[in-house]
Amino acid sequence: MDRRGFVRTLGAGTLSALLPQPSRAAAASGSPSDAHAAAWDRTLFLIELKGGNDGLNTVVPYAQDAYYRLRPRLAIARDEVLRLGPDTGLHPALRPLLPVWEAGELAIIQGLGYPDPNLSHFRSIEIWDTASGASEVRSEGWLARA
Image 1 (cartoon, helix red, strand yellow):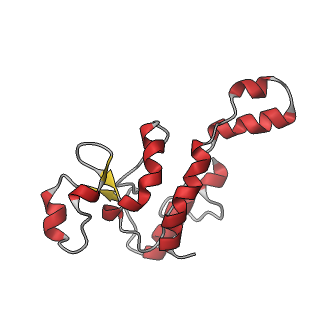
Image 2: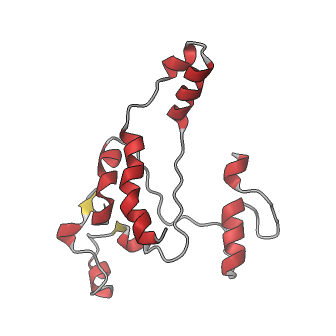
C-alpha cells in the first residue's frame, strides 16, 4: 500500500476507536473472554510513517505566517485546515480523526527525538526503533519490551 492509500484508509481504521469499547467491569466477571475484551481498554495504536511523510502538512502550523511564506505551493490553505486549536490543525484528509481528538482519545507528539542524534540515517532508525543508546545494539524494539 502506498502512503496515499494508507492516509485514505486511515479513516476506516479510526472507526475501531469510535466503536463502543468493553469496560473494565467485564474483566471483573471472571470470564477469560471478558478479561480479553477488557484488555482493549488499554490499547495503543502506534502509527509511524517512515519515509517521505511531510509532518508540517500532517499537523499544520496554520497560525504561523512563515509556514505559508516558506511553502507557497505546498502549504495547506488556512480555510482547509481542520483546526485542533489556535495554532495547529490537521490535513483535510485526516477528518476521520477529528471525533477521536474531540473525545480526548488522540494525542499528537511533535518534535520527538533522542539525545545526541547520530548523523547516520540508518543507525538513527535503529536507535529510534529499539530505544537503544548510541553505542548499544539491540535486536528487539522498545514496544516489545514495554
